[in-house]
Amino acid sequence: MSYFQAVRLYSAAELTIFTALVVVWVGGLGDHTKEILGWCHGFGWIALCLLVANGCVRDIFPWPLLAATVSPAGPLGSSIGFFLLDRRVR
Image (cartoon, rainbow, N blue to C red; front, side):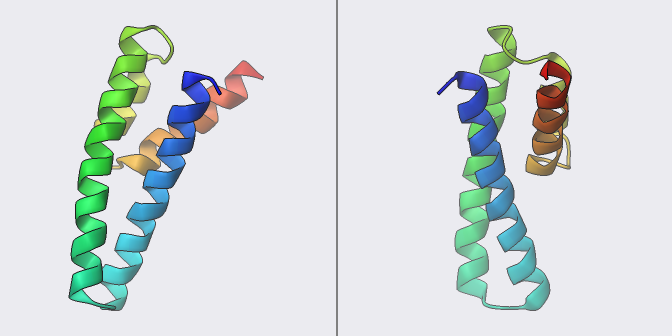
């Protein structure tokens, strides 16, 4: 598996955690679950930003992908960025 594919998969996993956090928060489905998902998302987002930054330094990713990743859109921004990069390559 290439670095591009691995980070793209991790971005999708982080987006799934973020989506679950939003659903639990909006639905009021439990404070403990919200806390666990919040910690997972927080550390996961930091890791995603570092992985994308490393890829940018190694010229695997363009710098605008890092901007999309660290934006308030977070994992959604990086997932959209990866989708657009994948379409451009094909």
